[in-house]
Structure formats: structure tokens, C-alpha cells
Length: 211
Length: 211
Image (cartoon, chains in turn red, orange):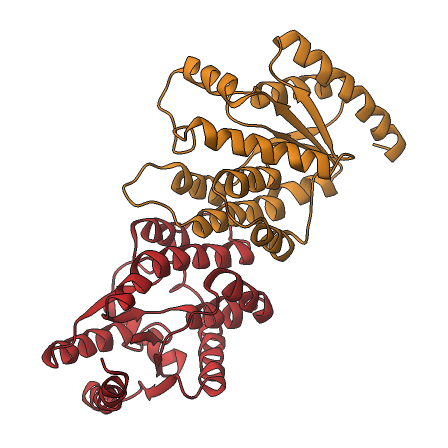
């Protein structure tokens, strides 16, 4: 099983990934957790280039190519070998984030992203994608609450994140079998119980697949 | 005019680029010199990722995407704006190097490179490409003579550079109008006089184009 965690900043996807990891551990399932962009040595270096602040703005296609460069390294050296060994892989963001951020957020042609997805990944996609959904305002207020120095994406304006959110929801609608949309504008307990009920259905799925 | 300088390590392309720059200066032509991978702030950061030594090997498509990421930034922010202003651009390596190194050298599918070239650059190409040609052995001995710490590409074996060279020559054959192949296994004087005679034909070309 390859499971991804998606959503805008501050919706709690990283917290929920950790929660799922704990649940899998309890169930005796062997898994690996990773994140994008990054996940590999090369990928983390690319992540640094992507998140750095600098005077020179990114050409949108450059940002897009860097995302896919990090992803190609990640898929080939980490994700596919783990899946082949029978591990579950939990990944913080994947290609859906590229559609949402570079497509929805930056307004890049979605067909260009689709072209790269086919060229680079041969359309390799997750089995299940959790989408944690909340209004951009809610997410951004939580990010502010964290403190620390915001990265290049976190400095974007609220309408950028609303476009990102909208694109995520459109993708969830287009791939209903893969997506599990969770309302993240709720208490942690409520969100976790929703995640847990999705996990139950996975376990059955896993059983059916002989995992 | 967009002029590129290509060839394997140690054939003297950077020296010849400087020579052409001097000649253009004498002729009162306004130009800009740049290099790949790099040429921009983002591009130089990507160059660092590409040339660094690390334990983790690159997935070939990752290297390819990084090359095009740096190139997209370079074309959009440096090369096209300069050409629009009427400047000549002299560039140390461009897309032909990607075909030669990642295609010929690493054995990546040339059709994949072609797909990216179309997707990222809309097939934007140089007006003239100097290809400095010499056996890999000759080039590598000159690189050794330079001293200093070799980068990741310079550590490749001789048959890698012979494949690179062969691919360069194949491209020169496929695009005879654009390429000027110069025998670099000659004295500096002989190479410069060949370059100079090509420059003369440019000038006429420039005159015809009203440069």
C-alpha cells in the first residue's frame, strides 16, 4: 500500500501521518514514512533550493521540474523498492500536491503537469490519498500559531491557498476511489476518529490483497 | 544571435568562448556570456546539486530534469530577454550537451530528452553551435593538466566521454546548418583561426539579418 497525505498548510496532515504510523505499528504492519519534496539526499538538496528565499523569482516551469526531479529520485530509490519488499509507504505529499500548488496555486497548465507525470513517473500513483480539507484561513492561522520562520510557500497570500485547496478538491472528485477527503476544520479527536475509520477499511483492503 | 559552445571536457570551449567574446568586442557587437548548467541564481544552486559528490547515485531522469530546470530558468530570465534587446548571447553548453551527456553518456532514451525539450523549451534552439571535437583521451589529459578537484562528471571513465563525443557528432550531422564542427586536437592558433573564419561568416549573416 502506498498512502499519501495531502492538504494545504496547517491542516494537520503531518500530525495525522504520525497517527496513522502509530496505528499501523499497533497492527504489526511494517511501513516506511517519507515526505516530498525530499525523502532522499538529492531530494532534500532540491527541497532546499525550492524553499529558499532569494531575490530571483522562480520561472514556474523550473519549480515544476524541480518537484518532479526530487520525486523521480524518491520513487526510484525509496518508494518502489519499499513497496517491492512488501512495506507500506506513508508519504507526506506527492504528485497531487504538484497539481494543487504549481497547477492551482501558480496557474501552470495542468496538461503540462500531466505530460511530466506520464514522462517521469509512467503515471505511478498512490493507492490511497488522504486529503485534509479546511478553509485556507483556518490552515494559515494554525501555521502562524506554530511560530518559526515561514518558508517561500508559507508566505503566499490566502487566495493562493484557496486556489490550491480548490484544485485538491477537484482532484478528489476526479479520483473518488483513491481519495479520502477528511474535514480538517474539526477537533483533533474528530479528525483522528475519521482517519481511524478509513484505516479500518484499508485493513480490509490489505487483507483482500494478502498484505 | 544565440551562439553555443559545445564539446567534451578539455577541448577548450571555454577558452574559445572568451576568444569569440574578444572578437565581438572589437567588432562593436554588444553581447552577453553565460554558461550551463547555471547562468542564474537558481541555476547555479541547481548546478551545485548536479556537480556535488555524494554517496547516493542520481536516478538518470532526475539528473535530466535538473538540467532542464536550470535551463528553463536561464532561457526565461537571461537568454530570451537579452536576445529581445538585440544582444548576442554566447553560452557555454546548452541542450545539445544534454543529448550528449545524459543521452549518449548515461544512455537515457533520446526520445525522453526530445519530449522534455518540446515541453519545457518549445524547441527553442541556438542559431549557431560551435562543436569543439577531439578524442576523449586528448580532452581528459588536458583536464588532468589543469589540476584542481574534479567534479562528478570529470570523474567519468574514457568510454563515457567517447559516447558523449559520438552523440555530439551525430547531432552535428543531423543539424548541419546550425553546427560548426572544429577540430580541437590542434594547436591553439589553428583552432582560433578556424573559429575566426566562422565568425566572419557570422558577421555576414549578422549583416544580412540587420544586426
